[in-house]
Length: 317
Ligand SMILES: [Zn+2]
Image (cartoon, rainbow, N blue to C red; front, side, top):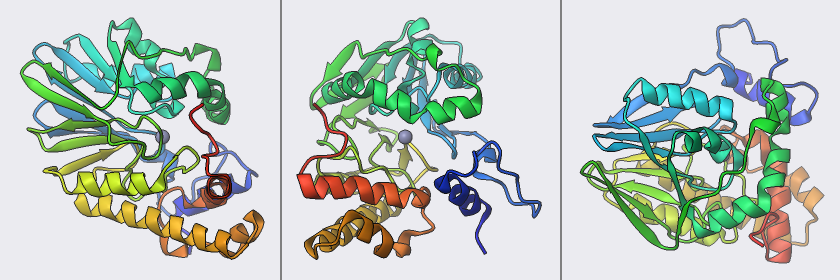
């Protein structure tokens, strides 16, 4: 029997019914959209907000102010994030890090700009924000409609500061390292490492038990290498842009899944299969219980473009 989550996603994938209109089954199971937002203090003063149906955030509270990672996918959601932060501190918001340029992680920026934060991102993330803002808005129109959010409230807020390979911030005696190991899911993927706390926020490249959209990656092999690199670091908690708190095994499992996806797709393309033939015949069923599997047709379609042209479907210009 299909779980409630798969059932709901199957309906969505077919496009017959919106998530908001889907009726909850009466067997006591919880729909994906109804899984509550959870805040966990993963280390002293370091909070992780996990929202299964949307995207995750983290913030570090210090005596000198607050550092926030990612801002959600609409200013209304960002106001909710700010309210959650205000339950933990009344210190000013000093820094905001945007890990990558997908709208579900930075369309709430305007709220934190109003709070006076300084924004940081990788140079290529700034490039992706400029190049793909309209595409990102388009990708999220269904969500805005469903939530009854006004798209006009979203403003493009670019980073005040960009970096290329590594940037270290000290705030209130705490150390935060922004690390760039090359592109993972996206050009410009920032990894936010808290060395003393043995915690890393991974943004796009790692999400526990979750398929990641491969339409932006210029190098699946670098993405896999990055995951194995961070799995080998002195880290206990891996906070993904989506999904719950992960451990090393979860990171290595995603590396393996991406490697299997890449190998399966290359094999199919080398056999001369068309995109539609791959969609019909190559199912990656070993990973059918992983979040977002219902979008597999889109993933195959995007990655087919990459393998046959050498360029990601949504490239950095
Ligand atoms: Zn996302």
